[in-house]
Image (cartoon, rainbow, N blue to C red; front, side, top):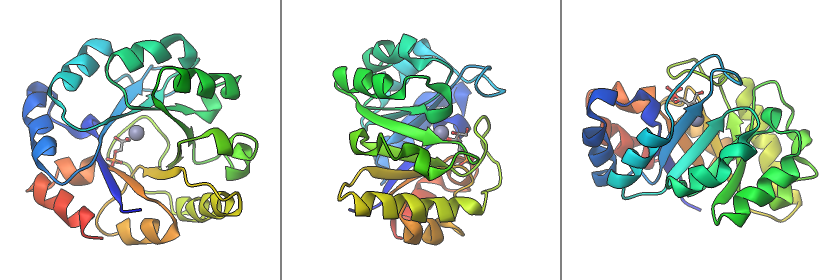
Length: 216
Ligand code: DX5
Ligand code: ZN
């Protein structure tokens, strides 16, 4: 499987979103990573449906929607209607995770589960075969531009071992503090979807940075 790069729009220029979306459309990036925050599950708010629908209007690549919200079941269908191709919920935010995963799949979207830095990989043991994607958070969710937490590399290896032992191939995504210095180690550990916000959008030439990510 080749490496998928999903630039995070959280670090884009919100005063000129269409320009950054067009840059990603024209670049070698594969997906748009879209971070939804509710101010409860995480100590920050991002944006909601009107903005997501505007993104959908311009984006020509799949929308990878990362829900950092409590009780996401209430909004799954609405996110699908707003253009989400992949919907990822947090393990820590779902009381009935199996039900939530089935709900996501019933909308036709791919289903992912994210693990916070403190949540052990083995918590996914009983649900892993139902997942299209596992997201290892390599920072505490809520903000862009944070430092990569080193233990995440070990967790990527653990999830890679788990899926290999079950003979399944969900996407293994890593999100938070990914840059051109640590990209090789997370790929070697098992990641095949890379989220990159700050390292793409704060670089002098974002589409060239995307190209460099894709060359690994
Ligand atoms: C953090 C978000 C990330 C964030 C990553 O809660 O889930 O997707 O945008 O940004 P960087 O790459 O800057 O750490
Ligand atoms: Zn994210």
